[in-house]
Length: 88
Image 1 (tube, rainbow, N blue to C red):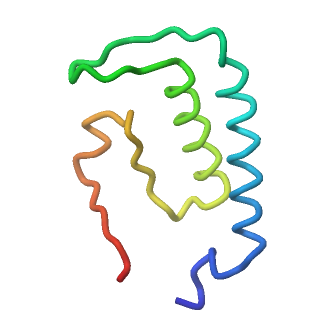
Image 2: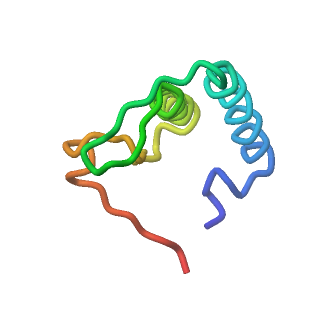
C-alpha cells in the first residue's frame, strides 16, 4: 500500500487539522442553539449533524477526490452502490 495517501504523515495531519476546524465551526458554534428533528427510525438529527457531514464530505472531496464518502445522513440513493470494506 505504498501509494496510499495516508502512508504520508502530512496527510494525516491535514485530515486531523481540517476536521478539528470543521468541528469548531460547525458543531461548537451551534452548541447552545440546538434544533432537533426526529428521524423515521426515532433517532435525533440536529443541524450540526447535517452541516458537519456536508462540510466533512466537501473537505474530503476537495483534498482526496479519489475516495468515496458514506455518512450516517447520506441519502439512500447515494448508498445504493456503496460497498464498505475493511482491510485486514
